Amino acid sequence: MRPLRLENRIAPPSVPTVPPPAMAYLNHLRFTAMQCRAMPRTGLFEACALLKTTQAETKQAYATALMRCLNEALGQRARLHAPGVAELTFDELWLLQLGSASATGDTLSLQFLLKSRVAHEHRRLVSFLIHQIVRCFPLD
Image 1: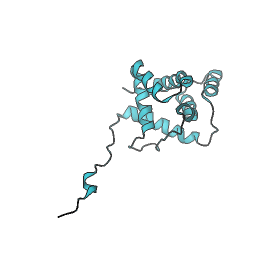
Image 2: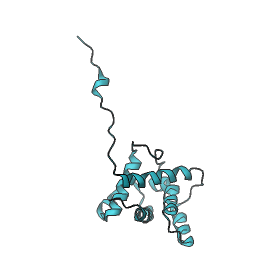
Image 3: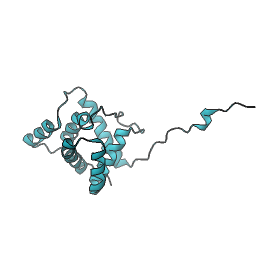
């Protein structure tokens, strides 16, 4: 009798197909997260207050604010791959779904995604930052 070869039965993890505009959005967030590693962490309220006082309206400013305080918003360290990697982490898939819900105006999905991972006191600010970033990245 032949022994079972389990390695033949295990399928490799599937890589979801992500449209190019959505991948550009995700890669921008990944690149920004890499830049933010050397920066001190900041609270969500501080980050949004800084945006308001400097009148920053660039996608980089909003992405930087989100990435600097994403760990606080999630209550744990976010896992992000380097830009250009096709494989997605759970956190990256969540950010893509959050951006897509924001871009399409799907408020029910947006609320569900925020409630599932973000503390109540941070939801409004994370939603604001995602809306601003998505304005610069049409995800259609």
